[in-house]
Amino acid sequence: MAIKRILVPVDFSKASLQALDYAREFATPFGADLLIVHVVEPIYYATPIDMYAASPNVAMLVDEQRRMATAHLQRLSADLTKTGLAHRTMLKSGAPAQVIVDTAKSAKADLVIMATHGRTGLAHVLLGSVAERVVRTAACPVLTVRTAAGRRPARRAPSRAAKKR
Image (cartoon, rainbow, N blue to C red):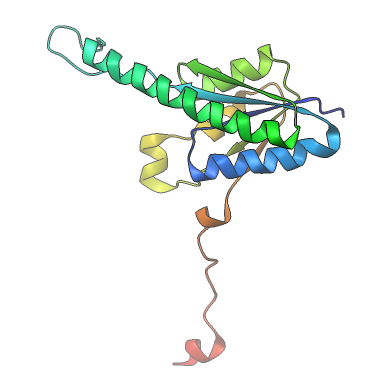
């Protein structure tokens, strides 16, 4: 299997930046290009007249998010340029999982490498999992990277001495 293009979604969290580092190391022996994508989600709020209308204040927040994301992507690009790794950055809007899947398809990515935050329980139910949706719907393979900081310590079985007490 030839790996020429790797899509790496980033939300600028520590976990996603560690996944980007992983993708950079992964891409090097293959001579693959990195496509770094950040997705800005639309913000909606409820009003009595229109339950999902964007207001001018919300539009200003989205513009600020886009401006900050552009600055972050430029810094990431500058750092990657120093390594000599071929890459490009993209800023997109929409539902993150769908945008990632669509971008991977349109960019003809051979692989998606992304972070997973490892949420479980109620947090997973309420927030969902972008990584899970991408894994289920992407046309190409998806490698999820869970950072060491995100892992919980392994549960240890009680010792025999503890069981006897």
